[in-house]
Structure formats: C-alpha cells, structure tokens
Image (cartoon, rainbow, N blue to C red; front, side, top):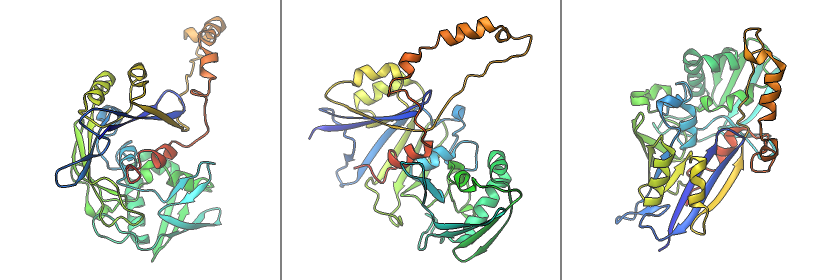
Length: 328
C-alpha cells in the first residue's frame, strides 16, 4: 500500500495555514493500522511547547487553548463559517436580550469525556474558572454574573459587549469540566479526542472519544510529538518517524514539492505587526530610517495570493484542518 503523509504548516508570519499531503513508499502511512486493526497517527508539532506558552492542553493556562482545540479535546460555544459568520457549536442559539445581557441555549445530549453532562451549570463553572485564572479572557469577556437554568446560560456583562460571542469563540473559551480537575495539564472536554498523557515539551497522547456527540472519530490513537526544530521535523517526516507535521519551516518546503506530496493551505486571520518607536531617542524617529525600512519590504512578493492577508479567524484553520475527527 502506498504511504500517505500529511504535513500541516501554520504560516505564522502571514495570514494563511497550510497542509501538505503525499503518497510515497515509506513504511509509515498517514494512518498506521496496527496488527489489531487500531488506527494510529503520530504528528510532529513545532508549536506545542512551553516557549510558545502551550505548556499543556488546559485552555485556562496562557495559550494552551490552541492545543486543546487543535487536537480535538475541547470545543467552544461558537465557531466561524467560511464567510466569517458565527455558527453554533456547543451553543445552538443565542439572544442579546439587552446591551448587558446574553441568553445562550446549549446543545442537548452533549457529555464531557469525564461523563458529566454539558449543561448550563457546567458551562457557568467553566467560565467562572476561566475568568479567575486567565487575565486576557477576564478583560475580553467582562462578565459580571451568570445564571444557569438547565440548558440555558444567561450572562450579564459589566459593560456592553457586542462582540461577546466572538470572544467566546477564542480557544481559551473551550468548554471543559472543571470538576474533573487539571492533573498534568489534562482536561475533560467535549471533543472527539481525549488526552490521556501530557508531558510538556515532549509529547501528548490522545485516544478517540467513543461517546463523541457529533460524529465518529476516525483515528483510534494520536501521538503529538514536540519537535521545535524545523529541520528535525522535516527529517522525521521524510524518514517515516512521524506521519504528519504541523509548523513546517519554510526552507523545508522544497524537499516536499514533488509528486509524493500534495500541498494545500487555508487562510486565517493571524497577523503580525511591526511597530516603530517614535520616541525622540529612537532611531525610528528619523523619517529617513522609516523610509529605508519601508523600501526594504518586498511588497511585490507579499502581494502574491500565497501571502495575501485573508480576513479569516485563525480558529477556522483549526476547525477545518486539524480537527482530527475528519482525518481518514
């Protein structure tokens, strides 16, 4: 059988995310089927590390929400469509009752991997813990109080928050069962995969959620290996040590630009800005310096479709590409 390999590359400097898939004659496959028929997948990831503030999969810890949602452990109340419209996910409908009040109705029959029902009380506890432990979320959400009634959660904000749902779609907004605890940075979410072993800066092991509410996961067991060096990641993929890669270095692209691999990409909203210090003591206070910097930017290359800024929320990449329930 031809080997099937997959590379998922986040283009972190610009606004797109990429994936490369290919067929070759390596022993390993995109899905490795064991003798017992269990489908496994090993992914190399340059971003899952403490230096990137992804210490674990606890969305209430710094930027670890990205790993939580990227690997299908947690899900948020809402997600985004290709046209940037908010769509239901764990919430099925909502109402902005007044400028300080939101009423959110949750999906029925959803359980956390801990076995607990995902109801309004569980979501309330999750958001309370989030705002107590995550400063950015606290400042974004501005939650004053909440009431839980069955599957209906009412949120009162300290000030008008017309973008509240957008913030609830941030990876830190993954809904988890806080009663299940946070041992070793592992949380109980509602997603298609369950984290069973998490060693910061080394690896993450997941198994499929047999009781997943929104479909059947296609992989039985996933291993995420932290490989921070881009060249090492590329070599591991070529040798068959891993079957997929996330965060491939640009300089490694040429070795995969052949018939054995298929490269695909999807746009996101990730954008980086270069700011100049206009303080009188700064070299950038000199207009000539600023002009020289502007002239040094290769605008022609950056205007190509591959690099163009596509106004897409970065969550969209995680929803469409590495949502591992979709990998076959």
